[in-house]
Length: 507
Image (cartoon, rainbow, N blue to C red; front, side):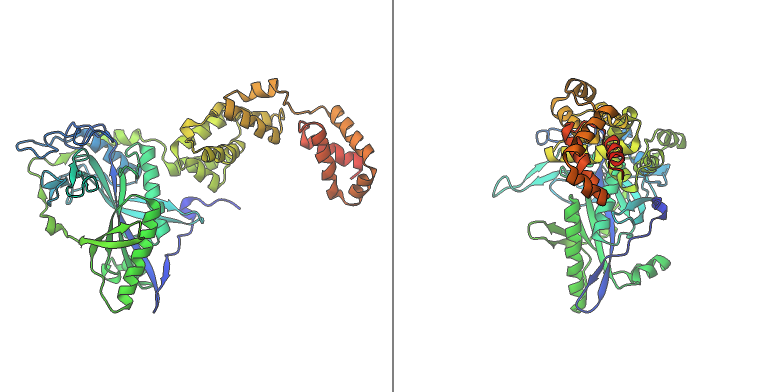
């Protein structure tokens, strides 16, 4: 059966959650905040280094000192453009920054510089492939640049809170999706796909643990069929009231939070109540969401154009130059692996999930000259061993060239697949080259038909009863093959052994 291209894959069915009175469907939109990979902040030259001493990476403008003016970092703009191009989005040559006004202790300016009315990136799309062979296209509404707030620390003293402004002013890309996601697993897969694309582009390091990638998840419920009416008409009235779950930094917790929030809303509606639009937090210890604040609208933040920043104008030629230097992205790489190396959809997905793994695989192929065999060894042997040892692909003890040598040795019949695993183990643990291991350890496969024939004759002569059984039931010939392999220390070529055994037994 031929593998389907992503565009040909069926769309996943929406998540159905049974209530006490009827079935309900989920509707999910997401706002993903991705920290831009740059050395300096969005409007200052202060470092973005993670883990520095508290309040050591702070410029005067970050601290909100009077008279300090923001100066835009061109590298941050370039990274936003790269991300937009990677998501097949429209790049706006004219954009502008606005002030989002609110008070919080870790926001020293008293406002956040963002882009509400004129974002730098417009509509795009992300293809989210699920493990069951389905795929959904999630529409991107916009990507805008904004500065991050600082960090409030509440667990260092029982009576006081502390503020670290190192993160204040760090550039964020807020990637806003349409409400196209229809289940918890899809939501996690969507964030995972965004993370993968940005890692390929080099625009965000994707570190969710450090908060460099986090998501606000908007969840609502609707009756079956209502979502289709919304898509036909664009009328949000067909959908339920949404609640936003703030600052999710775990794919597993995103799924759990959506499940809980959906059931909470169903219980309210079926009980005759009304879901209030609000911002909620997910408590991972209790496995539930709790109210944080009522959901603010744009007017609550008193947005207005930032008077210290001119509108941002970029040239099409600059955008074209960035586009011309984009790397090969995950979907294109996966399609190439399937087409060039004859890989299955699953194997190509596994090998392109991580950019370093994809590079490693192609280096193995360059040595082995056999894509399918290289994929099997990388996925089954190498990935399995790295997972067991809790080691990343970048720290693999066995190099791509060494693994390619093993594949090449098997392909040339110098060693068997079984011996190949022994060679892999020695090379992995010692760093020795496979070719040298095979030569010095006497592991070369026996292909001399005369020697194999002698071993077969000896075993047949010693086991007449087993010969009769095998001649009556040819399936039992495998016993002789096993005995020959045992007698030759596993070095005999299994294919040659099979042929000689079959001929000698007259099967």
